Length: 155
Figure 1 (tube, rainbow, N blue to C red):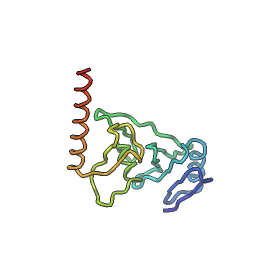
Figure 2: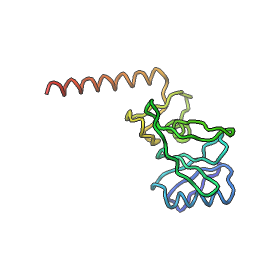
Figure 3: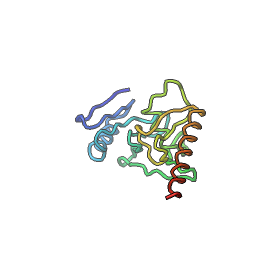
Figure 4: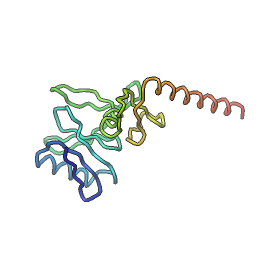
């Protein structure tokens, strides 16, 4: 995988893009990226999709590029529709970010939001956990919330 450092503002990791696609990607990164935002290609899909450390998804289209707008499902997570094998595939944004940017040497299956905000999909807010670690983390969070509610009621 080739890494391009474009004017030291942003990093882009790409596998095999044609010149036109590289120019589109670089123009997007130059004009619309957040400072320090890193982009990586999402592998295994039909089209050219990129995910950033900020939780943003970029699609390279025939007529340019498109910053995809995530949608929220009933479970509270952000999703985007990506094309795979000619069909739309609904993907959780936090999972795409974690797979691209968060190390998982122990092959843990669950992506956890550190701040428990399912809409905060920044790489710095995500970590891999086992089911037991995830359950323990949420038990602790729920106990803290319960204490806060009790303290509020007493006042």
